[in-house]
Every structure is written in structure tokens, then in C-alpha cells.
Length: 174
Image (cartoon, rainbow, N blue to C red):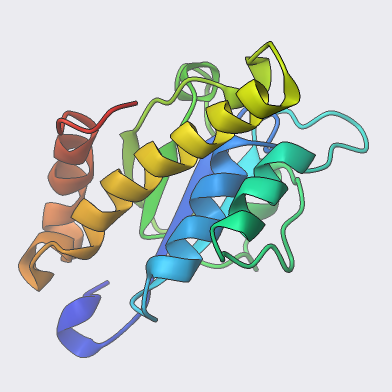
């Protein structure tokens, strides 16, 4: 898919194990920041029964002025179905999901791993735990800003694989 050159939207799927924190933050942030050039989704390799997005993550998103409408935890199997949106880029945001055997994605999208510490594992006061989510959102947004500011040629299908993986090694706090 030629994305920016012909004004098509680049579809991005963020993956994590439970789809409750990091992947949800990334989905919401990219949809907020993407300026119509990007459409993001998130999913988990093994969301728990009745899994919901972490309330602290939703609070941090709302406090940052980012919509939480439509966010819910789901399995990555939804995106391996023939009728699922075709992804251009799939990014794992936790080490567990990065090490798992992924489904065969329709269209063979580019893949990358952008690891972030799990804010839901933070301990301490409510404010300290909330700060862990703020810091994770901050790190995700910094890397997304780099993606959003890439020249169109870097987002072309053949270049996207290397571009996304190079951003994983950028000097952005994780």
C-alpha cells in the first residue's frame, strides 16, 4: 500500500499480552495524533476473560485530552480474520507479545517491536501508579511523533519495515 503518496490511511495495530494498558495507550494516542494519515487499533495475544482497559490508563488519556471512546480489550485473532481491516504496520509494545508466535496477518504487514515497561505493574500510592501511566504515555507519544514526522517515502510499504524498526532504537525513553 502506498500510504501518504496517494493520501491513503496507514493502518497500525498495537499488540500486547492482555490489551489493557500499553497497547490501549498507543491506539488512543496515534488516533489522536494521526491527523487522518493513520488509523490505529490494539489487541492482545491472550486477553483475560472480561478484560477491560486499565482504569488508570483511561484516566491518563482523558487527562491528556485524548478520547477513550470505543476503547476495549480484544484478542489479536480479530485482526487475522479475512474481513478484518488490512494492517500496514503491526507493533508489539510488550516483550511477551513480541516473543509469541503471531497469527498470519492478511497482507503481510511490516512489523516492529517498541518495548515499554508495563505501567500496570507499578506499585505505590495511587498518584505513583498514575505517574507510571503518564510516563508510559509520554514515551509512546514521543516515538509516535517521530513516526508522524517521517517523510512520505519512509512510510511507503517497502521502506516501512526498516523505518518502524529504526524508531525502536531511537533515543526515546521507554
